Image (cartoon, rainbow, N blue to C red; front, top):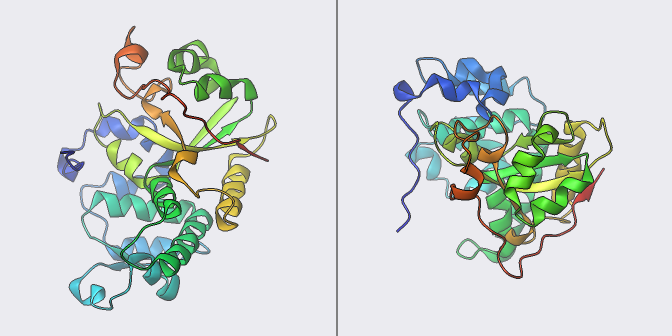
Amino acid sequence: MKTRFAAPPRAEIDPAVFARPPLAHWSEFDELLRGPEWPGIAALAARATCVPGAPRFVAQTPALLRDGLHYEDRIAVRGEIATRECNWHDLLNALVWLRYPVLKRALNARQTAEIAAMGPKRRSRAQCALTHFDEAGVVVVLRDYDLLAPWDAHEWTRLFRDDAAAWLDGRIDVAVFGHALLEHALKPHQLVVGKAIVVLAPPGADLDAAIDRVARSVGAGEILLDPQELRPLPLSGIPGWHADSTAPDFYESAPCFRPLRTGRRYPPALRL
């Protein structure tokens, strides 16, 4: 039986995790992440007032839940995100909303449409795909198209070690979107695997443009119709993202680097 991930208590977080990606990429929220005290709902709400398209963060209480609304419907109908206080998962979800509200809104709109079609007790393949991306999603901008072949073949040593320079010189760029990924990164030796949407882009193309491209495709129902669309990307393999990535046998022995399953094929990448 798989054990549900439990984030460390706030007081026991190793400060080193905030200096290493992916959490290092969220430094604009340092006071919310690193402070000795949990930020309250009011602190998140104050941040949201400065972000166009951001919803209202409200405390998840028994009284709130008595409205009978589905979590996603509450966002769509009332513009409210039920948020548990003193909870890493919900805090990190709030930060993703603050940074990527357009993409979050697109996912919410698709989820509510699926709930209306399927009812509250069944889940479609699209709902599973949307949830997987919301929790563990990564947007990858690929400016060197030759890197897609070793990735699709799960040739991890070639992708991460042989082509290590590509992760540093701008040929490939990663935006971690899934808040569960960020939560897992709170444990310094956790092996983290993202579920990626790939955007092929010319040199110099902006990462934000790729995020917008993904948001439009999600909103239009062009992608995230099935979980099998998502490419696994072991984020721990990116140079500098995991303390053990320089170990000689890391890419051959760490369990996050799985071989390609027989018959597994990935869909074409999006293009800017």
